[in-house]
Image (cartoon, rainbow over the protein chains, first blue to last red):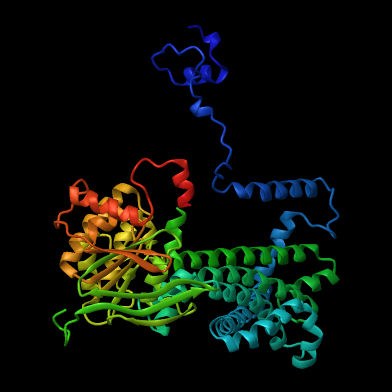
Length: 293
Length: 252
């Protein structure tokens, strides 16, 4: 049997894996296992996601070094890093970050507690459902930012106002997802709980809460992102501290390096907080982690 | 159980039990009596009302219209076609779910050992095979030492080999725990292998009440077994002779 009769793939396989040549049957192809095309997605390489951002930074640095960029509109990455270092060492950045962080965390905590409580009231009792669900759905249709004028009227432009805006933005995704998880508990699991004679409390503790947790976490991840969004807006409009304030001040003086530092801080916060939530989710929903692996 | 003040003589009694969906009577005045420790298999075609009867005895049909009385003992357990293990509880916690009192975990471990799952207490349900999950469900149903065990096609979703092993396991378990059993199945052989009595239900009524007088170790090729099988198949409207297309059309 000559090699000519074999397909190209087979020849490559045969070369790569020197095995005792067996005469192939005419009309058969050696299964090209090592070169099989996979239809599914290929597994992503660890850290490969950093490639895109890296290329952008390199292009940005090159353009800046070649004098292609107006530093008032876009400073080079080196200058941004230097500005960031200066803001860190003189304490300005830390002060603003702390102000933003405390607003975000406080708003997140209040919004999450309120969202969960409302979801429990609406999800577990018929009266609660008729009182709460419609109300929250209407509230959902009104963008949080549209409430700013009214809230300023009520609360002024202090911290209460900012935390309230964040909390209201957080409440909605938490409520929607937790409520739908609570009402979507598998009928069969309710039947099992009944047949085992579980008390109301045991049912909540062993069936309802664990069953609704995945839905809650979907809402919580959206809420964390949402809390940063709401924060950016309130800090850009009315504030005397915070990352948003720092950036809007920089805009007045055309300090694009400070604006970029602010953007990077927001990005890092968004990324880190999402990673933390995912870590928490993995811990709490450990029975699912093993399912995925 | 010896601790009971008075021994049961009857495990289930239903009186003129009627259940209907819309204007269709699914159960049409059922009078059923199961003695203490008796194993009753309930067979019937799909839509005959066998599952409706089991759910009525289990008290899981609040939303269904009907009348009649159902009398059951205090400790009733259910086994479903799917294991219904809660995925977020480990196997042992699933088994003892809803049980109270001292030594609960120990009882759970013991009954898990009885179904051959010793050492898997800490496993998540999805780490078990289908047969193991159903064994865990069986353990959960027995941990309360039920006086009545209700089973709705508990082996229906298992492969044939696993099912054979489960039949053996169930017989062994019943010798230890001896609850009364009401088993819903569509498998005539399963009914004859396990039950003391087979009830055939058709259009919401019993069309046959067959006492199975076979030795304890049952053998599907025993002439009495074969005769009983033919009797049951005939009651279900299935010819044992090679079926023709016309027969099949008649059945469906």
